[in-house]
Length: 303
Image (tube, rainbow, N blue to C red; front, side):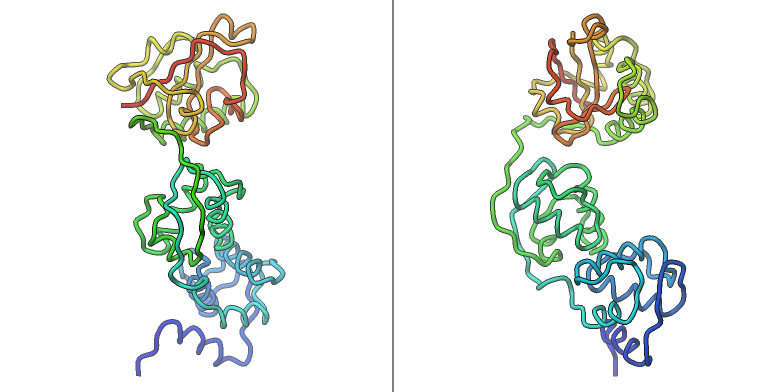
Protein backbone atom coordinates (compact mmCIF):
# COMPACT_ATOMS: atom_id res chain seq x y z
CA UNK A 1 0.00 0.00 0.00
CA UNK A 2 1.34 3.44 -0.91
CA UNK A 3 1.41 6.03 1.87
CA UNK A 4 1.15 9.73 1.11
CA UNK A 5 3.90 12.09 2.21
CA UNK A 6 1.48 13.70 4.70
CA UNK A 7 0.73 10.30 6.23
CA UNK A 8 4.43 9.46 6.41
CA UNK A 9 5.09 12.59 8.46
CA UNK A 10 2.38 11.71 10.99
CA UNK A 11 3.32 8.01 11.11
CA UNK A 12 6.95 8.92 11.64
CA UNK A 13 6.04 11.05 14.62
CA UNK A 14 3.59 8.49 16.01
CA UNK A 15 6.02 5.59 15.71
CA UNK A 16 8.44 7.12 18.21
CA UNK A 17 7.58 7.13 21.96
CA UNK A 18 8.53 10.80 22.06
CA UNK A 19 9.84 13.01 19.30
CA UNK A 20 13.26 14.44 20.20
CA UNK A 21 13.57 18.04 21.26
CA UNK A 22 15.06 19.96 18.36
CA UNK A 23 16.63 23.39 18.18
CA UNK A 24 19.08 25.48 16.17
CA UNK A 25 22.07 23.28 15.35
CA UNK A 26 20.19 19.96 15.45
CA UNK A 27 20.44 17.64 12.46
CA UNK A 28 19.29 14.29 11.17
CA UNK A 29 16.12 12.48 10.14
CA UNK A 30 13.98 14.09 12.85
CA UNK A 31 14.88 17.53 11.51
CA UNK A 32 13.81 16.42 8.02
CA UNK A 33 10.49 15.27 9.46
CA UNK A 34 10.14 18.65 11.15
CA UNK A 35 10.94 20.53 7.95
CA UNK A 36 8.43 18.47 5.96
CA UNK A 37 5.73 19.14 8.54
CA UNK A 38 6.48 22.88 8.57
CA UNK A 39 6.36 23.05 4.78
CA UNK A 40 3.05 21.17 4.71
CA UNK A 41 1.61 23.62 7.25
CA UNK A 42 2.67 26.54 5.04
CA UNK A 43 5.72 27.73 7.01
CA UNK A 44 8.77 27.67 4.76
CA UNK A 45 11.79 26.08 6.54
CA UNK A 46 14.09 26.36 3.53
CA UNK A 47 15.62 23.24 2.05
CA UNK A 48 14.45 19.92 3.55
CA UNK A 49 18.01 18.87 4.28
CA UNK A 50 17.93 17.71 7.90
CA UNK A 51 19.89 20.75 9.08
CA UNK A 52 18.18 22.96 11.70
CA UNK A 53 19.49 26.31 10.53
CA UNK A 54 18.27 29.93 10.89
CA UNK A 55 15.54 29.58 8.25
CA UNK A 56 14.09 26.49 9.93
CA UNK A 57 14.27 28.28 13.29
CA UNK A 58 12.38 31.26 11.84
CA UNK A 59 9.71 28.93 10.43
CA UNK A 60 9.35 27.19 13.80
CA UNK A 61 8.92 30.51 15.60
CA UNK A 62 6.34 31.68 13.06
CA UNK A 63 4.42 28.40 13.48
CA UNK A 64 4.57 28.59 17.27
CA UNK A 65 3.35 32.17 17.24
CA UNK A 66 0.47 31.29 14.90
CA UNK A 67 -0.56 28.42 17.19
CA UNK A 68 -0.38 30.42 20.43
CA UNK A 69 2.75 28.68 21.69
CA UNK A 70 5.86 30.25 23.16
CA UNK A 71 7.82 31.31 20.06
CA UNK A 72 11.25 30.18 21.27
CA UNK A 73 12.25 28.19 18.18
CA UNK A 74 12.64 25.00 20.24
CA UNK A 75 10.59 22.03 19.06
CA UNK A 76 9.36 20.16 22.14
CA UNK A 77 6.27 18.02 22.85
CA UNK A 78 3.75 20.85 22.47
CA UNK A 79 5.14 21.99 19.13
CA UNK A 80 5.34 18.41 17.84
CA UNK A 81 1.72 17.84 18.86
CA UNK A 82 0.56 20.92 16.98
CA UNK A 83 2.64 20.02 13.93
CA UNK A 84 1.27 16.48 13.77
CA UNK A 85 -2.26 17.85 13.84
CA UNK A 86 -1.61 20.77 11.51
CA UNK A 87 -3.46 20.93 8.23
CA UNK A 88 -2.61 23.01 5.23
CA UNK A 89 -2.78 26.73 6.08
CA UNK A 90 -6.42 27.63 6.63
CA UNK A 91 -9.09 26.25 4.36
CA UNK A 92 -8.40 25.93 0.63
CA UNK A 93 -10.16 28.21 -1.77
CA UNK A 94 -9.14 31.54 -0.27
CA UNK A 95 -9.95 34.58 -2.36
CA UNK A 96 -9.52 38.32 -2.53
CA UNK A 97 -8.98 41.26 -4.87
CA UNK A 98 -6.00 41.30 -7.20
CA UNK A 99 -3.18 43.14 -5.44
CA UNK A 100 0.20 44.35 -6.62
CA UNK A 101 2.89 46.87 -5.74
CA UNK A 102 1.46 50.35 -5.31
CA UNK A 103 -1.88 49.21 -3.92
CA UNK A 104 -2.90 50.13 -0.39
CA UNK A 105 -5.73 49.63 2.08
CA UNK A 106 -7.27 46.93 4.28
CA UNK A 107 -6.80 44.04 1.80
CA UNK A 108 -3.08 44.76 1.71
CA UNK A 109 -2.94 44.77 5.53
CA UNK A 110 -4.64 41.35 5.59
CA UNK A 111 -2.17 40.06 3.01
CA UNK A 112 0.82 41.32 5.00
CA UNK A 113 -0.49 39.80 8.25
CA UNK A 114 -0.96 36.42 6.54
CA UNK A 115 2.49 36.45 4.92
CA UNK A 116 4.13 37.35 8.23
CA UNK A 117 2.15 34.61 9.98
CA UNK A 118 3.43 32.06 7.47
CA UNK A 119 7.04 33.12 7.94
CA UNK A 120 7.41 35.30 4.83
CA UNK A 121 8.58 38.71 6.02
CA UNK A 122 6.34 41.38 4.48
CA UNK A 123 7.50 44.04 6.90
CA UNK A 124 5.10 46.13 8.96
CA UNK A 125 1.42 45.42 8.24
CA UNK A 126 0.86 49.05 7.25
CA UNK A 127 -1.47 48.51 4.28
CA UNK A 128 1.13 49.75 1.79
CA UNK A 129 2.12 47.25 -0.90
CA UNK A 130 5.75 48.25 -1.32
CA UNK A 131 8.99 46.46 -2.33
CA UNK A 132 9.25 44.43 0.88
CA UNK A 133 5.71 43.07 0.52
CA UNK A 134 6.43 42.31 -3.15
CA UNK A 135 9.54 40.34 -2.17
CA UNK A 136 7.53 38.38 0.44
CA UNK A 137 4.81 37.59 -2.11
CA UNK A 138 7.38 36.37 -4.63
CA UNK A 139 9.07 34.18 -2.01
CA UNK A 140 5.71 32.70 -1.04
CA UNK A 141 4.73 32.09 -4.66
CA UNK A 142 8.06 30.41 -5.37
CA UNK A 143 7.68 28.17 -2.31
CA UNK A 144 4.23 27.12 -3.51
CA UNK A 145 5.30 26.44 -7.10
CA UNK A 146 3.45 29.45 -8.51
CA UNK A 147 4.70 32.02 -11.01
CA UNK A 148 6.68 34.41 -8.79
CA UNK A 149 5.44 37.67 -10.33
CA UNK A 150 4.56 39.47 -7.09
CA UNK A 151 0.91 39.86 -8.14
CA UNK A 152 -1.63 38.39 -5.71
CA UNK A 153 -4.37 36.82 -7.82
CA UNK A 154 -6.74 33.85 -7.40
CA UNK A 155 -4.04 31.15 -7.30
CA UNK A 156 -1.98 33.00 -4.71
CA UNK A 157 -5.04 33.71 -2.53
CA UNK A 158 -5.95 30.03 -2.75
CA UNK A 159 -2.53 29.04 -1.44
CA UNK A 160 -2.64 31.71 1.26
CA UNK A 161 -5.87 30.09 2.45
CA UNK A 162 -7.74 33.22 3.52
CA UNK A 163 -10.67 35.12 2.07
CA UNK A 164 -10.30 38.88 2.02
CA UNK A 165 -12.96 41.38 1.03
CA UNK A 166 -12.70 45.03 0.15
CA UNK A 167 -11.28 47.09 -2.68
CA UNK A 168 -7.70 48.32 -2.53
CA UNK A 169 -6.74 51.87 -3.29
CA UNK A 170 -5.38 51.79 -6.82
CA UNK A 171 -2.19 53.72 -7.60
CA UNK A 172 -2.66 56.60 -10.00
CA UNK A 173 -2.19 55.92 -13.70
CA UNK A 174 1.39 56.52 -14.76
CA UNK A 175 0.77 56.42 -18.49
CA UNK A 176 2.96 53.38 -19.05
CA UNK A 177 5.92 54.80 -17.12
CA UNK A 178 8.16 52.04 -15.82
CA UNK A 179 11.13 52.12 -13.52
CA UNK A 180 14.16 49.93 -12.91
CA UNK A 181 14.33 47.92 -9.69
CA UNK A 182 18.05 47.22 -10.19
CA UNK A 183 18.73 50.96 -10.28
CA UNK A 184 16.67 51.46 -7.12
CA UNK A 185 18.52 48.64 -5.33
CA UNK A 186 21.92 49.98 -6.38
CA UNK A 187 20.90 53.48 -5.31
CA UNK A 188 19.92 52.18 -1.88
CA UNK A 189 23.24 50.37 -1.51
CA UNK A 190 25.17 53.50 -2.50
CA UNK A 191 23.16 55.70 -0.14
CA UNK A 192 23.72 53.41 2.84
CA UNK A 193 27.42 53.25 2.01
CA UNK A 194 27.75 57.03 1.88
CA UNK A 195 25.62 58.93 4.37
CA UNK A 196 23.18 56.32 5.63
CA UNK A 197 20.23 58.43 6.73
CA UNK A 198 22.12 61.74 6.90
CA UNK A 199 22.85 63.92 3.88
CA UNK A 200 26.49 64.52 3.01
CA UNK A 201 25.74 67.23 0.46
CA UNK A 202 26.80 64.86 -2.34
CA UNK A 203 23.45 63.90 -3.86
CA UNK A 204 24.71 63.98 -7.47
CA UNK A 205 27.67 61.76 -6.57
CA UNK A 206 25.33 59.18 -5.05
CA UNK A 207 23.00 59.19 -8.04
CA UNK A 208 25.88 59.01 -10.50
CA UNK A 209 27.41 56.03 -8.68
CA UNK A 210 24.11 54.16 -8.73
CA UNK A 211 23.70 54.80 -12.46
CA UNK A 212 27.27 53.67 -13.10
CA UNK A 213 26.72 50.43 -11.15
CA UNK A 214 23.54 49.72 -13.09
CA UNK A 215 24.43 50.86 -16.62
CA UNK A 216 28.22 51.15 -16.59
CA UNK A 217 28.10 54.85 -17.52
CA UNK A 218 29.28 57.91 -15.61
CA UNK A 219 26.95 60.92 -15.41
CA UNK A 220 28.56 64.21 -14.48
CA UNK A 221 27.11 67.35 -12.99
CA UNK A 222 25.45 68.76 -9.88
CA UNK A 223 21.91 68.05 -8.78
CA UNK A 224 20.54 70.62 -11.22
CA UNK A 225 22.88 69.57 -14.05
CA UNK A 226 22.39 65.81 -14.11
CA UNK A 227 19.09 66.21 -15.98
CA UNK A 228 20.99 67.68 -18.94
CA UNK A 229 23.68 65.01 -18.83
CA UNK A 230 21.56 61.87 -18.59
CA UNK A 231 22.12 59.92 -21.84
CA UNK A 232 18.90 60.09 -23.83
CA UNK A 233 19.33 56.54 -25.09
CA UNK A 234 19.04 55.42 -21.46
CA UNK A 235 16.57 57.91 -19.94
CA UNK A 236 13.70 60.07 -21.11
CA UNK A 237 11.78 62.79 -19.30
CA UNK A 238 8.22 61.92 -18.28
CA UNK A 239 5.35 63.96 -16.90
CA UNK A 240 4.58 62.71 -13.38
CA UNK A 241 3.87 64.37 -10.07
CA UNK A 242 6.24 63.65 -7.19
CA UNK A 243 3.60 61.48 -5.50
CA UNK A 244 3.17 59.39 -8.66
CA UNK A 245 6.91 59.09 -9.30
CA UNK A 246 7.68 57.92 -5.77
CA UNK A 247 5.48 54.86 -6.28
CA UNK A 248 7.76 53.59 -9.08
CA UNK A 249 11.25 52.26 -8.24
CA UNK A 250 14.28 53.47 -10.17
CA UNK A 251 13.17 56.85 -11.55
CA UNK A 252 15.64 59.74 -11.50
CA UNK A 253 14.33 62.90 -9.87
CA UNK A 254 15.91 66.35 -10.18
CA UNK A 255 15.15 69.77 -8.69
CA UNK A 256 16.65 73.06 -9.83
CA UNK A 257 16.65 74.50 -6.31
CA UNK A 258 15.97 73.50 -2.71
CA UNK A 259 15.58 75.50 0.50
CA UNK A 260 19.11 74.82 1.79
CA UNK A 261 22.06 77.10 1.04
CA UNK A 262 23.85 74.54 -1.12
CA UNK A 263 20.58 73.38 -2.63
CA UNK A 264 19.78 76.89 -3.78
CA UNK A 265 22.98 76.75 -5.85
CA UNK A 266 23.33 73.13 -6.87
CA UNK A 267 19.78 71.79 -6.71
CA UNK A 268 19.05 68.21 -5.75
CA UNK A 269 18.74 64.80 -7.39
CA UNK A 270 17.65 61.38 -6.17
CA UNK A 271 16.43 57.97 -7.30
CA UNK A 272 13.03 56.66 -6.22
CA UNK A 273 12.68 53.61 -3.96
CA UNK A 274 9.15 52.80 -5.13
CA UNK A 275 7.56 52.81 -1.67
CA UNK A 276 5.63 56.04 -2.26
CA UNK A 277 7.70 58.15 0.14
CA UNK A 278 11.46 57.70 0.09
CA UNK A 279 14.35 58.19 -2.33
CA UNK A 280 18.10 57.60 -2.49
CA UNK A 281 21.06 59.81 -3.32
CA UNK A 282 24.07 60.14 -1.00
CA UNK A 283 21.68 59.15 1.80
CA UNK A 284 18.27 57.59 2.32
CA UNK A 285 15.66 60.34 2.43
CA UNK A 286 12.77 58.73 4.31
CA UNK A 287 10.17 61.35 3.44
CA UNK A 288 10.88 62.89 0.06
CA UNK A 289 7.16 63.46 -0.37
CA UNK A 290 7.14 65.72 2.68
CA UNK A 291 10.25 67.72 1.80
CA UNK A 292 9.35 71.36 1.12
CA UNK A 293 11.03 74.35 -0.47
CA UNK A 294 12.00 72.63 -3.72
CA UNK A 295 11.35 73.90 -7.23
CA UNK A 296 12.07 73.03 -10.87
CA UNK A 297 11.06 69.38 -10.50
CA UNK A 298 11.71 66.84 -13.32
CA UNK A 299 11.35 63.06 -13.64
CA UNK A 300 13.37 60.75 -15.88
CA UNK A 301 12.42 57.16 -16.72
CA UNK A 302 14.94 54.46 -17.65
CA UNK A 303 14.32 53.28 -21.22
